[in-house]
Amino acid sequence: MAFETNKLVGKAGRVAVPAGAAAALVLAAGMFVHHNGVHAAMVSSPISSPAPMDDNSVSSLVALDNAVEAVAARVTPAVVNVAVTSRGSAEHQVGEDQEDGQEQGPQGQSLPPGLQQFFGQLPPGMMQQQRPQQPQLEHGIGSGIIISPDGYIVTNNHVVDGAVEMRVTLHDRRVLKAKLVGRDPLTDLAVIKVDAHDLPSIAWGDSTKLKPGQTVLAFGSPFGYFQFSVTRGIVSAVDRQNPYRDDARKPGGYIQTDAAINPGNSGGPLVNARGELVGINTFIISNGGSFAGAGFAIPSQIVRTTAEQLIKTGAVHHGYLGISMNDVTPENASFFNLKDANGAIVAQVTPDSPAARAGLKNGDVIVELNGQKIVNGGALQVAVSEDTPGTSIDLGIIRNGSQQTVKVQVGEFHKEAEVASDGESATPQKAKLGLAVAELTPDVRQQLHIPSQVQGVAIQSVRPGSPADDASLAPGDVILEVDRHPVTSAEQFVNAAHANPDGKDLLLLVWSRGGASYRVVHPDSGNQSGM
Image (cartoon, rainbow, N blue to C red; front, side, top):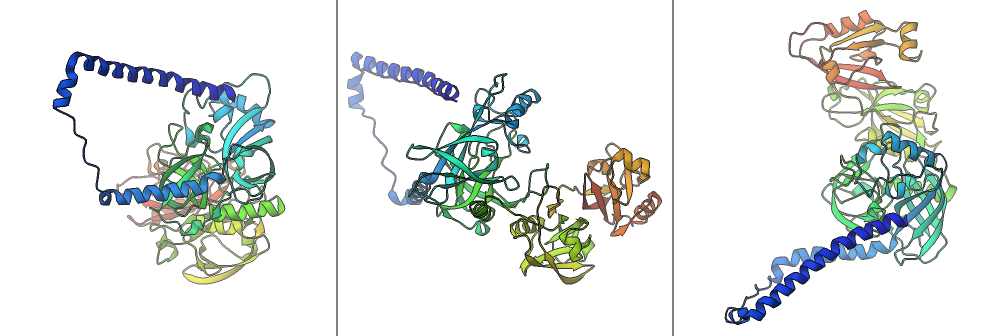
């Protein structure tokens, strides 16, 4: 760790020396000209200084600066730097990851699974460090925020995952040992604690009240070196979907911001204009490895609930329904007799799940939860995840154009169970499809690894460049329904597809990689033959 820091300081020193030398040369040149009599000419034609700007013309900028300074001064004392020493499976994975091209954070900290794609190629010399060949401890750097005066700190789970020792640097430069209180991989949050009292802490904000365009500040230790940094930006968007394609069960609802967030900022706070905690910085999307204008934070709505449970019990008990969902969109709303594009479409119900026991069915559209409007699947997913298992909830649904209320007893999430998961990865497609289908014979099931409970027709091949190819339909996917009607044979599917009137959209229910999702298919305007 010291080597990397010293190397960075050394580089800075080498840059500073030539700059200082250049300044000295300019000064010497000025003295030389003075010595040769130019001074008299300068006296006769003095350089006048421009008049200062009128206070009224810059008062708004000055007021903004003062406000940002006040927020930064209030929040920074509660920000911490988290240095982690870890070992075990993670350390062995790092060596393998370097051979496989997996990116690493400062001091050899490997980026968590599912996040490498957002960082791309990391800056040379700073973010890629060759690990020793022999097994040893590895060191990582992250950020955190003090949420109570008695030393409870929130950070990211991926910052402390596998930690055998944690040291927290406070704003007053004290370095304290920290212990793990609890962590929650599903939300990527963790709580740690230091033995201290009367610490500065941050106030909770309400992330549900955030609007695009509002000012936010991000705090942390970018690249692990620049401790207690602050950047300013706006809320670019709210309720961003879950980007972890390795696990659709993780809740979304992320806050997107253009306040600069870089590796090392993980676990640091995102605050509103009042200095209240509205999010925990967690990842960026970038092709170059550094901030590119799109940073993401876990909303305080999730952070506070998770942190309180971790402090109270050391674990988080997430609620689940046992469904996969699509968002209602303008293009699929008409298929479900909906007046607007709000709600979550049930695409799959897990057998013997809370949703199945309550009678939810494929094609139901969930529009309310306990009387509150559901905008999309992500909002429902976050709300259900926060519900205590065993809680009874009322879901307002639309089934075949008729509004109903279904009472569901929320189950408890387990790794082997399906939670309410968002099927947003489904991509709208075109038709004629440009594909061939096959019956689900035992041989086909075995070859394509299709479970026995999945009933439909298997996609056998997809023509390159066809509408199906453009739509990401792939061999091995199974078509379960056409326009809300189940299909159980290849002939039935072909007849249903050809019976679709020219220019009319087609709705398919497709099983792919363990989950089902509704997909709207747009007819090809050309006279294309085949499927």
